[in-house]
Image 1 (tube, rainbow, N blue to C red):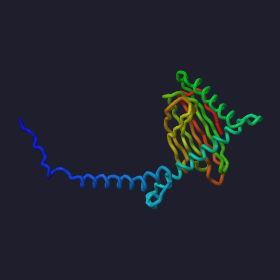
Image 2: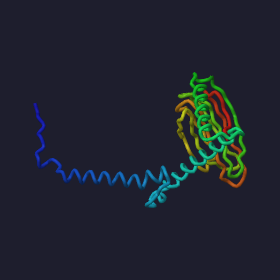
Image 3: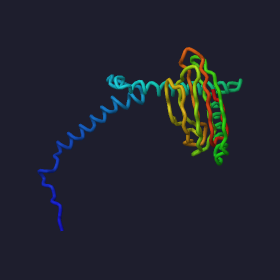
Length: 216
């Protein structure tokens, strides 16, 4: 039988070498974080390298679309408040109650496939959101096109206290694919017209969802 020779003490790395390797690894990880991850995900670019590589713009798009979608969702929620203008506690309880209703309604078997088409006209600066009510694992094929210009978009989902983003884009004239619900809730698109003229967005969907509705 052949026995592997044990390395001698001289062949083993010294404590100094291990410390030096650890420091190099930490420095490399920090460099990747500062020059790639922060610009691409959060538009934070302290070195300027991210912008030179086009990563900062990617992060700006993600941040802008997320902020716009959240702002419009809050406006829509405020518009749904009754004239009595309930306080923060009442508003919070209403949101929790709504989430429970949505979760209960969606926690059923996936509905039979259906096909829909929605057309929305967006003025300059205007945004719109269309959602599909889906249960976890349900799938829906989609395609949308823009006439008269381009839009920024965010394909995302929310429900039961969960949120997720499937896809984001800027200056797009069309998109198509399949959305698979990550959880029970509403899953769909937010579009924003950043041009100077009106645009028309036409959305076509086909799949297992209980309802399609315009949120904003």
